[in-house]
Image 1 (cartoon, helix red, strand yellow):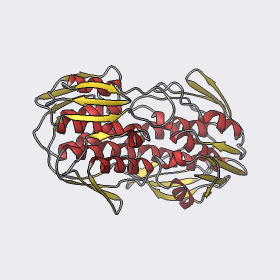
Image 2 (tube, helix red, strand yellow; image 1 turned 90 degrees about the vertical axis):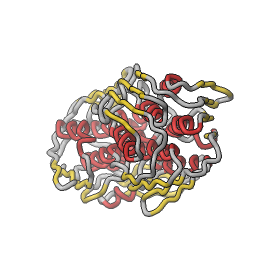
Image 3 (cartoon, helix red, strand yellow; image 1 turned 30 degrees about the vertical axis):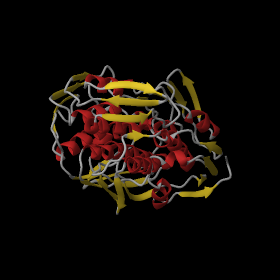
Length: 421
């Protein structure tokens, strides 16, 4: 197990690129289960969640090779339709194999998923979508067991817009007989990207990018090459790293509209951003963050996955900011750790009330989940003295060598082994 040692107070400066979006890749990789052939995926991030999905797919009999930042996936000889607990417990995205296995083989046995230890995130929407398509669903000994001779098109309406459930419904409906309509579908870029990949494979999908999707089932798909979109959460995190340290950054990124909600708030806080030739940049040399309230919302609103990072920035705000998470009610485990660094944050129901302070001071803190970990790194970069961050394995789930990118910007950050159990 490793930890980070950060010596803060350095103005980060320089140019870095944004890695591929792990959440997009984790939906697209299982899509390759839908046909017998070889797909090539480019711009795959080197993060632990990707390696976990690779292990799960290998267990199913898929040949998965990592080559030069991409994956070659051959699902010609799938040997198993069971996704066991030892793989699925590590991340919730493993449940994405449910729809493809059920649709192609008429059977899937998938362990109930795991992932970050916060928030009630039930998978009932996934299961109800499969039932709508004609599957029989049982829960036995911690496993989802789904059966169907062939799925049939249906109208699926989600009472709550869900990225995971929309993705699974898309995957399942692609080979279903007839037409499926999904209303109140998620419109996150990762879902749009999944739909675009399925279309390249031969799926018939209309309404892509809207909350009304229509899928006309096909009998088979074909192999395709595809490039994973940039990770909008990594992009937002790197921008705040430069902002919180009064630095300057040139961020290489396509599709800047994916983070409009974040860049708009950064501008509200006093920064002037420029986007030109796929470079998003700003100079925060004389920047003192204006305290700006945030309410998280489904896309295109402010992402819940950026809530902790925004909280870190607001610790140095000029007054008081209220950060409210409307997606998850208890996603504030980073707050006590930020307070250890000198922040003044109070939790009131599902809001963090942040009173800006003049400075943060280094201390030993502990990561609790992926995005909470990122907020501690950001605060440590701005804090005076040394910050020690334990349990950074959470970060490795979703950020590709984040310390290397920060070093490229001039940060004094070291990954060192720890004897912590």
